Length: 512
Image (cartoon, rainbow, N blue to C red):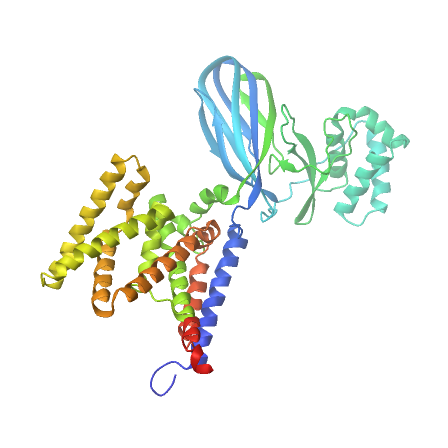
């Protein structure tokens, strides 16, 4: 602080830098934590997956429980819905997310649908899952002794549970001619995942079978594929079972894979019905990231989610326009301080630009010029009556309303529906514009009115282009940090004490 109590220039610039950094941090936090896209129009992949459950009801109460996909590494479940006429439906969360249908009585073939919208999200991280207890396992002879021989051989070629699992899986994948492997494969061909899981349990390694879905655009009647989850202490990894092109658990490394359950549990349980079956259909689409995250953002009420999205929709719509005003103010500062453009009223162009957004640019320009020109003629008559200021302004306001009404009716009669948009202009603002221009005409002449009027319209058009730009609308609405950056820029501009561009032209003759 200086001795006069004013902040020093150094502290002033430090304050500006602090505001700027806060703005950048808020923007990056919003992008990294809440996955709000920085780029307008950025799209992400959405998978629409539908599960179709079929079974035969036995003319008694029915309860159906189906595993639901959890949020997992690489995927976020955005929306869930189900179609089940007559059935009660509940979504149960926890370690075993389920969709549970129930009905007091059903008979014959029943069909239930479940649909999930899943976003491909690289920000989603893997969740820690507690290892299950390892059960005691024995196999019938001679398979038990054969499995022990294979496990002993694998143990010597591994260092931990994960390398042990990889080595065991590779034996079944590539050593099909090995007599011991061949014996087990031939006997357990239909249940190879169960065999390998039991062999890991014999080696005292926590492991379980969970089911997932290989995602492929446009696939119908797809079945779930078993996967192997293995624990090594608190860590866990997923492994694909060895497969060939004809096995039901064959997968493709280049296709995304969605886990349909978090922990090992039945995929579907039907009480009061038989012959249950489930299969899946899926489609892929590319959609705006914002369109899909907006609903998720509005439901996140943590303190750091300081955004307009947490407000009701009506208030969000209002703020969508309000947050554009600082952008218009920044442009006005640049044009007035650096360029030297004179306007009628400091921030009058921002209000005019807001009206242009409602009316469209051409319609707004024509309407503004018509109303202001007609208003100036009326104002020139009122000035001859020597009225008090308040009464004169009131008369101008009423005149503006009459002019707008007249132009609206004329436009409607002539079939020019665009002309009806003139009613979007703020009438008080128009009245004050007319009053200011009229006083300016009386004091400094018509040339100054044309300069300031033209400057106002030029600034309003530039502000309109900026505020109507989809990139700027996207950034101001989704990143509150933009307001801090704009504020720091305006403070920095406010400290400028040099010449304006138009002044350089004005004093050009003096430099010669």
